[in-house]
Image 1 (cartoon, rainbow, N blue to C red):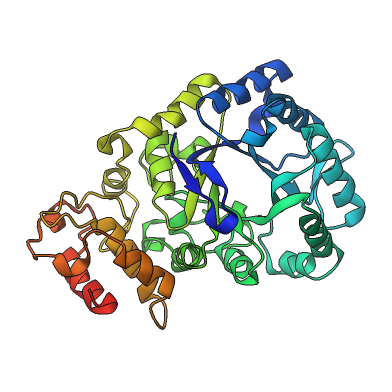
Image 2: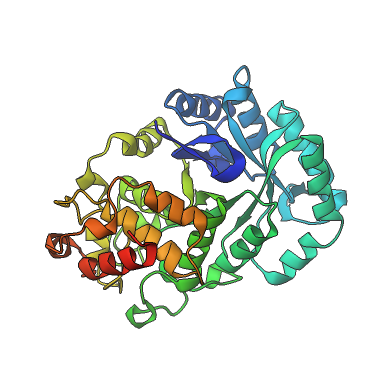
Length: 381
């Protein structure tokens, strides 16, 4: 298992994570064993947005004796009322729900205290102005939550979160289908009335959100990486083409800022299928060929950092150079952090010999040589 530093939290999280929302589907012993099996495979981060007592108890039992080797995303605002999940900013519900989380997890802290599920500006304003956010800061000051995070499906809310300066990581919905759709305050309407003409590559708001996270060193953990399994089948995929778990994990992990993909599991075989990413070949990871050959896509001319351009005779990491170019070109001036990372590359764009062999391999027709010239001019090397 490979591990990535989660933004400026300093936490080293496994590239493959554990999304816990399916735990309540099974008997307690089965789910406890499943979590422990995932941990044996190197998974060390688990998301617990679920307010139901069963799911929380399962995670607590599974972590018994090894709590310090898990990183927990625990949500504030996910409450259990009259046997139902209710999202709330009312401290009368939020406080007892969070205290219940700690009790059932058998811990006195969570590594990542998540401001739970904000998709609308109205909810953002409500959460950020009043007792709810004061409670979050109080818990952080006391060390009950070690780092403050937020979960959202809306890149516009994500950008607001990054700009606060105190939100250190974001749980965000990332997959190739979502990335092609504009921001919405209602995820259920994202794909209503879509057709090929609606697609124009990665939505600009989502692309700029990823860039901002990378620039500000705010880590992203991923939810809905498989779109609830819809992307595994041609007839349910918005692309009209099917992906594998490994391809979707690789897609998410190539987005700027992304550190871990929180997959949901019912069986050990599903854990194995996700963890197989760590030893997968380039061909097995190749999501770009699926997108390029799909009936519904419009990524022409856009770099998706897929790596098809390799190998380069000058040994330039073209995908990484393109990522740094995109990060810098969107800013009024080149951020120092981006410039520093770019200069640390073993080979920079100025070493491009203009052979254009990479362009013949690019599934999306990116004019790589031209981009290398622009990058060398922008960074000065």
